[in-house]
Length: 341
Image (tube, rainbow, N blue to C red; front, side):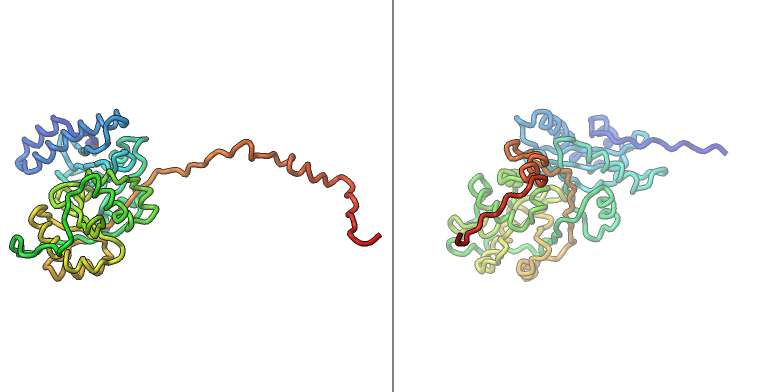
């Protein structure tokens, strides 16, 4: 009996030839998304080639291919403008293979994606559904560790009438710009512990890249109560992350219902993401008709190395020099007495 050789599994960057293959298959619903990913892949290559001139913003897309048939795709995008941290999306299944298991395809695709941008990329983050045990196990196998849980909320079935509520007097909803991003930054970082901040390595300027429909800052004069930013690293759905300070501000009880209407009207999000342990905000969302969705786990992998600063030669003394001053072989001198002679 002659064994059939296993067809090789290739991982390639998205190119125009792959788009032609997508047009040949019956389901072309993903074609516009991959066309945008192809343009982003070209831009990402330029950004990584000239990091001092172009900030890292554009995504890259890799495909797992067997005999010219796409099996899965993964999208990676910069998580900060420095390009030191990137985010991954879990691989999307595009086809079935008779020789390769789904887990093997995903593992091979992710292993190649983690090589993108090396050695400039020093850390990675990914969002996994808390119920996806296989996905979490795969990411842990690749060196990812759980960092922070999040809760997704689905919009209410009945959208409220426009302008049925308004913000309380003295509060305003302002777009994200250089001024409001600096004011929102301490609140956004307040919910992250030091290890997470080290992995993401972000700056307040990175909040400007998370601006879009539904994004903004709730202001009381120069004081920030809450903010909403786009979430890119989870999926291609329109998701907004709602950020507030660690301490609950009583003004949010009256302001958030009107703010949620603004988000539904301007952003039309598929989901709203909050911290998983934010009980006051969860109670308010339930009262406004929002439905509890899936829990997500933010996982991270870091290649940062501790920087050990070299000691100054002025403060470095050889061991024999230190012990030589003691001279234990010499006869000890007599101790002077303070008593009367």
